[in-house]
Every structure is written in C-alpha cells, then in structure tokens.
Length: 287
Ligand SMILES: [Zn+2]
Image 1 (cartoon, rainbow, N blue to C red):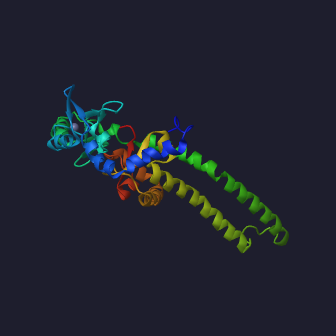
Image 2: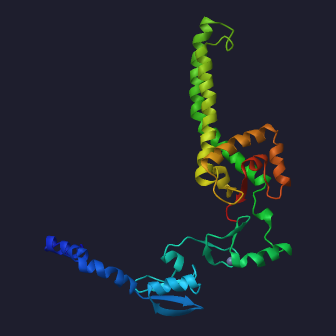
Image 3: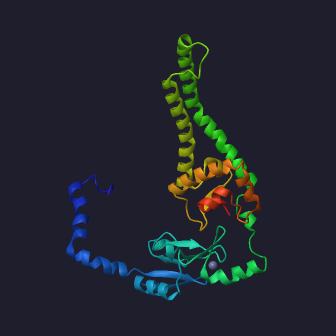
C-alpha cells in the first residue's frame, strides 16, 4: 500500500478491505481458489492444467506422489506436492523419494519406504547392506566426546570453585583462631552445610548440562563436536526424562570401573551399559 499512502490515504487504504470483506467476494473466494490451474511433472513432462480437486484425486490414486513436482501461476518455481500442501514426508534413503511418514521402516539411521523394503533386506542377506559399524558411534569417538564435555564442565565449575575456596579459607581463618589445629573435623555445622550445598551445586551443574543438551538437542556439546547423537532404539528423540535417567545410568556404568563402556566394543549396536538400561543408541549424525 505504500505507493498510494501519500495521497487520499484514508480512501485508498479502506477500499480493498471493503472489497474483500464484501459478501459477494467472500462467496466467490473458494471458487476462485478451486479454479486455480495446476501443472505437474511426470517423467520430465509437464501435464495439466488441472484444478485442486483433480490434483487431490491424482494424489489419492497415486499418479501424483509426495515428491511429484507441481506448479501453478504465481509460484516462483516447481515444488513438491508435500511442500506445496504441507504434507508430512520423509526421504527414503534407498529410492531417494519423498514418502509418507507412516508406514516407514528404520534400519540403523536409515529410512526405508515400503516399496524398497524387499530389495533392501534382500541386499542385507547378500551382505551388501550398509555397514552398521559406520552408523553407530564407537568407543574411542565417544571417549573423545566425553573428554570434551569434561573440559567444558571444568570451566563451568570454575566460578563456583573460586567462591568455595574464598568461603572456606575465610571460615578456616576465623575457626583456627578459636579451635587451633583441629580443623576441619572440628569445623562448625555451618561449614558442613555449606560444603553440602557446594557438592550439590557441583553435581547440579553437570546434571543440568547433560539433561538440557541431551533433552533439547539429543547430544551434549562434546557429542555435537564429534557429530554424535543419542537416540531411542526406534531412532526417535530422547525426552528430558530419559536424558535424566541416562545420566544416572551412566553414573552406574562409571561404578562398574568402566566395564560398562567396554561392553560397547563387543555389541553389534555399540551399546554401553547405560544404553541397555535406557533403550538408547549413540549414532553418527550424518549416517
Ligand atoms: Zn524407497
């Protein structure tokens, strides 16, 4: 409207609204939309024009699929049926076609449509299937991610540690004048309460770090750095609750003197103990 607002602003701005909201125009609107002419590409050839109803019929019939390119006047270019009509779709990793989200088969991190199912599993039987080892994150890459997280957490704890040092030294200075040579066992109740809070906050930092990143992004910054992602066995996202459970399960794995991690080296899906407990897998993000 900017091109007319300089002159007769009140008149020119209000006119289109009156026109659009007019009952006659409102009754015409669905018909105008229905009359819009669509074209679709089949075997590289444009077909059409057809109306929306016909387009929908062809889609139901299967002549137009989610990935079929369609166009009508006013659109900047050919676009998939799924995109133009906002239908949920995923890409089949075998035929590279856009297919409906259901029913779909997942294998590793691969998505396979029903049409490709038979040939894909025939390939697996012949040993031509993609290497599963290339899909799951192994021991060393996960260890690398763990070290990165440890370094990040170390720096996140620094302010708290400095605060604790200052507090405990000042307390020690005041206590030693009253109770010489028996610190810290003769320390005040205040000291032990403060120490409890300090230990809890140290725990809370790593717990919150883990649950936030895994629940929101499916990976801690360490795992993101090495392109790993934590998923459920069905490749779905890990919830905040499951992330929290996995944090404690991981603590249990640590309790096994890391034997729970070494398990991953012998498992076909490279599951560590906490992956068994929480029904999770660590996969490569781009696999
Ligand atoms: Zn397919």
